[in-house]
Every structure is written in C-alpha cells, then in structure tokens.
Length: 416
Image 1: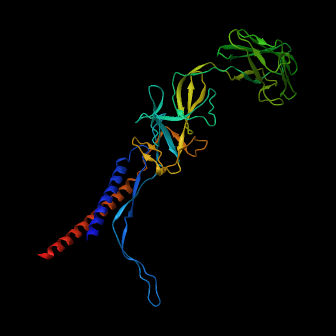
Image 2: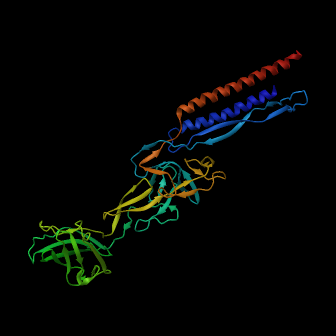
Image 3: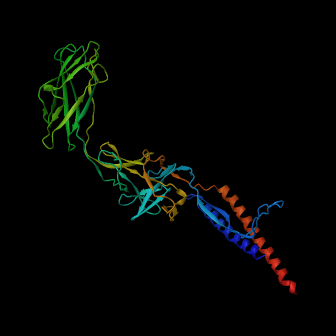
C-alpha cells in the first residue's frame, strides 16, 4: 500500500510537470519563432521480488516477479518543426524557412534565435526588437563582394554612409550610321562620363563620313583633354554589319586627363565585329548614340532592402545598389540540445554541439523570407488533447492515493 501511495504521488507530481509544459506551450501560441516542448515519462525503477529461473529437467522455467515503483520525467524535448511564415511588410523582419538560427550577440555572449523581428537602433545597429541583442553577419567590401571566410561581426548600417565614385572605363555604342550619307556628313553623339573623384565630364564623339561604309570619328572633351589625338575609324560591310573599329593613333583606349584628379582610360564597345548588335551601317538615317557608361558620382545611402539570401543591399542617391552585409545563420548537430535563455533566444549547451556558422546560398540550406516572421509551431488542438490526457492521468493518480489511503485506514482500524 505504501508503494501504491508513493507511485501515485510520483504520478501527481510528474503529470503536474507535464501540465506546466502544456500551459507554457499554449501561452506562447502567438510568440514569434517559439518552439513547442513535449514531456515523455519513464518508469522509475522496479523492485524484484523473485528472480527468473531457467528450466531444469522436467521442470519449467519461472518468470521474475517485480513491482514497479512509480514513474519519472523521461525528457522534456524541444520540437524544432517549421512554423508558418506570416507577411508583415516590415523591411527588416526575416523568417527562416528550413534549418538554421539567427546569430545574436549580447556583449561577449553568442545567442541564437528563430525570432526575426529586427530593427535598426539609434546607432544603425541591426538588433532584435525585443531584447536589443545585435544581429551578426559579414560585411561586403566597397564593390559589394563578401569574401569567402569573412569574419562574423555585429551588423551596423548608417543611412548617412557614402558610396565611393567610380570612374568611367567603358561606354557602349548602338544605332545606325547611314550608308547613304554623303562624304563630309557628320553625326555627333555625347554622354556624361565621370573621373575617379566623381566629377562629371561631357564627352563627344563626332563621326564624319569618308566614303561608302567608312567613317572617321574624333573624341573631344572641354574639361578633360583626350589622348591620343587624331581620328579613329569605323568600317561597315556590304550587309551593314560592323567590320572594323579603331582608336585614334592605333591606341587600345581613350585617356582623359582632368585638371583635378588622376587620368582615366575609357574603352569603347561598338558592338560585335560581323554583327549589328552595336553600330550598324544601313541606309536608314544616322541614329547612333552612346547607349551607356559605367561610371557614377559618390552617393548617400537612402534606402535598405533584404533579399531571400539575407543579403542587405543599400540603394544610394547616385542610383547605385550594392550589397552591404549578409545575415549569418547557425546550425547545430542537435537543436533540441540548445538551452533556452528567455527573450526567445537559446544558448549552445554541452549536448547541442558547437554552432556551424554559414550563409544562405553557401553552406546553409535554409532560405530567408524578408518582410515576414515565423509563427509559433504550437499545435493548439494537440495541446488541448494533451491537456485532457494529463488531467485524466492526474485524476487517476489522485484516485490511487485515495484508494491506498482508504486501505491504510481499514488496516489501522483492524485493532478497534
């Protein structure tokens, strides 16, 4: 009877623990990135009243006789199944699809979370909105490239930062130079190019017809003299396709020398020799233009966006868009081994394994959905079912205690 009483007490205590876990799950049904937990029970131990005996001669074997001594908590497991993603429209909200955890830092302590409700603080640091822990990632260089093996550090984005200027080193031509033009007819095209300091210079190319299918061209710029001096030439085939394109003086590029700043070279792309994808020489009126150039002035960061790789890109006032940083993700051999630390964050534990830091598109198979958050993975219908089961288990164990108490009462009353 004492054994039954103690087993019932163990059942009450451990079913109460299960109810505590269920209550916590239900309380966090709307917590961003929350992962549900479950309780499993195991038998405590058994008292052996008689050992087993093997068969001897004509006598059969005997099974052991054991009495269980109640139950204990076997485990409280964290279930890291995928939660649904809900769109929020906030630029720095991020939801992970697949395995992985955002990496945060609180001072020197590394923390991990699935809750991606991030924002910029007053210093431009990308932080968790609820805790202020700083999101970790890798920075891109001035050209927008993130080096392999880049160090992981706190992401800080200042909206006042600059994009350095880029000197023009390539311009592309397209359009037609009329095969019906008279000798001496001219066609001028111009474009603004930039030096290494971002100063703008107006470059003009003047084409002069020198015969059927042949043109000379001369580059001029008032603010940055062009070398080498002289004329280049363009020749078209009988079918109007580009046959040859040469620079003045037989050079391989134009060199512009501004009054302030370093000289810079410009290569001209007239199109494919033998093709008509750039300049052409048909009978149509001359319409050739400088289609594009790749230089730009310095610009200020005016907007930031995040893509599915967790790549944070900046849009600058000079029209340039380039990557600034990429959010890092951590994976673990045993996610259930992570230690909860409150604020929807986890710490690595002795049984989680060391974090493996990676990036989407690299060594992480997850993807990031910008402008969305991962919902709690709590299944409310399952939790209510578990609650009923736990309640009935609690009631049954309470009934065992009541019955054992009544039996003890009868035993005590035998003396009356």
